[in-house]
Picture (cartoon, helix red, strand yellow):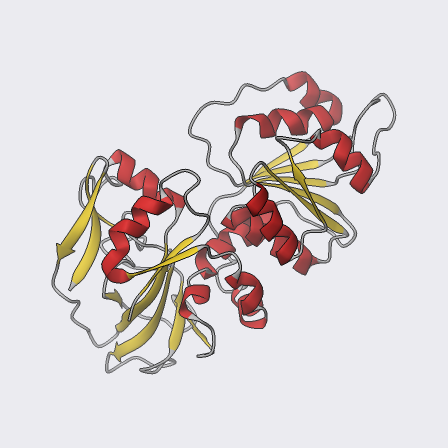
Length: 338
């Protein structure tokens, strides 16, 4: 079968590998869609992930159909449509340094456990939308880390897939308002379409002043000046100015969540952190959220479909990866299989 691999620093290519053999406790998945993640570009740039340096199969945002089950398997059937917990494979993280990747014709779930690696979804959910389950779980975990409460005022920096997923997750939590900040107007337009209460183009507007107008003034005590009443800031942008912007404007006791991946050090003025007593929390992966977010995708597939900017057939997967790693070329790329 065909599979996409990182073959060296900056290089991806097709490999022909043996199709998996199904054991008595295994489930064979025929891949139907697989999203391209920003980390795929990182894996390509560095030439793989140790210990599989130079030979890393790619693809960790899959949706699939059950193709074959082992004799001992219960709780799932051939023909079921499924989303996948890529962290629960016994042969390593799917598409993130493990033995298999989702940009392949087939993937084998070894030692299947009902409710553990797979979740069955309705067959009316488009495959490309189902493939968003994994990145939306990343977004949902970031939201959970900031511990939102009904009535909170939230700002999301970055209107890429994770930022838009966080927007939907915050809305699901019942917060009072969500403002999305970005420098690309088309992304901001999409955020409004998906449900943002307001947007700010930080290349054209003063973020602090605009937030005071939108969410009120939270200045109090010895903190004077521009301090929006924003309760939660989420950094899904990974842009150096975000951190300092939040430190400069955050009201006393606000929370900053960081889900963005920074590739360079960020210089911070800790004096601002001290006076604001800003709570900073971090988010990585999805310890419990992978199938929690599935319910919302099932309920609102049309909303999630808007996050996808480009689709490619599997035989053009290398082009899909190239587009996804080209800055400004696309927002969310998904590969689909016939």
